[in-house]
Length: 221
Image 1 (cartoon, helix red, strand yellow):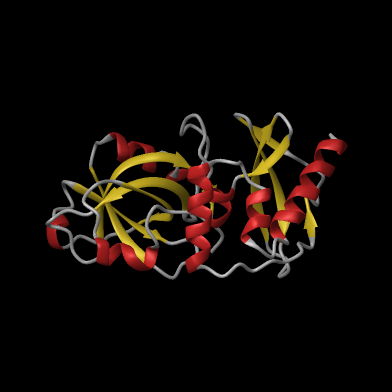
Image 2 (cartoon, rainbow, N blue to C red):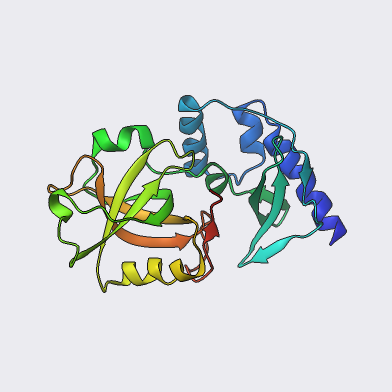
């Protein structure tokens, strides 16, 4: 276990300390689609390398369905989990979950208003907001969907008694904090400026797994 922690610690430090996109790519899975996502992302977002205060400060690694995760203590002493995948030649960082990647930048989605479902990583919490095409609270259940940096907000809707509602509500009673999810969302002709239908609950947390049965990540207020 100590050897595995050491390998992960070295990789995490190289990834978080990356000063160029090429160095970020070197720590992730070599896949043409992912590489293009990363290059496009850093055309819009500043790359901010840093050295963590500690990696796996408790010495623990969590493993779930081929994914490994360790806690990272950030420069402000807050703690965030980082996930990695075990490959034949070592580990690679799960970049999409670390940055909270979504198919469309949050700053643009209200202008684009995609009618086909798009994948978004969100901070999700129930809310009472029923307006425009979603005014009937007997038909719809509403959620506040926030971007990972909390700077952008959408309101998502699922039909009551739907599978989407059951997948979201089953964890609400266990937590009084917002939860992290991967969702597929879309606008409709009846949507207000910031209203979307939650077409699919892809996974709980921000790491893609084989199924959505794992518990979602609590987001600290």
